[in-house]
Image 1 (cartoon, rainbow, N blue to C red):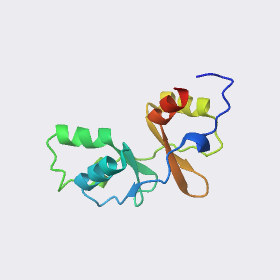
Image 2 (tube, helix red, strand yellow):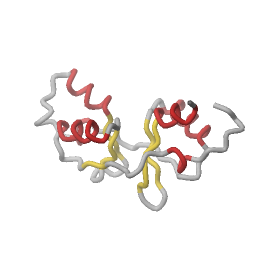
Image 3 (cartoon, rainbow, N blue to C red):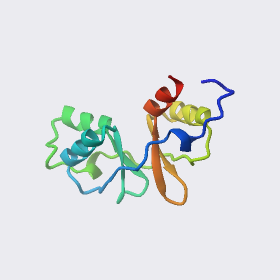
Image 4 (cartoon, one colour):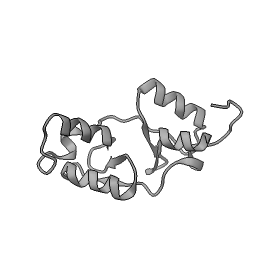
Length: 124
């Protein structure tokens, strides 16, 4: 990443934020991601959690029934967050350090999501 790039998260994050409840079935999470062309949802009843396409693929690979298995069963807990004013190079470093592809953006509340795809699109 160009160290002279002063782009902030707020300039590249995905909005509006797409969410889902923890008790929703995985099939619903997959449908919402597909309909919105995104790969992660913030879980509104999970307290700092997200569910990603990788979480869903892992459940399917283990033979889970996506109509019976809930978001709560597979969601990623205790997710790191970023603020809208953070610089993109800091976000990229955080993603690398934590081994994640999505970081919810929080101001006073959740306001968006920044992903590795957002970073790649910004650089192109």
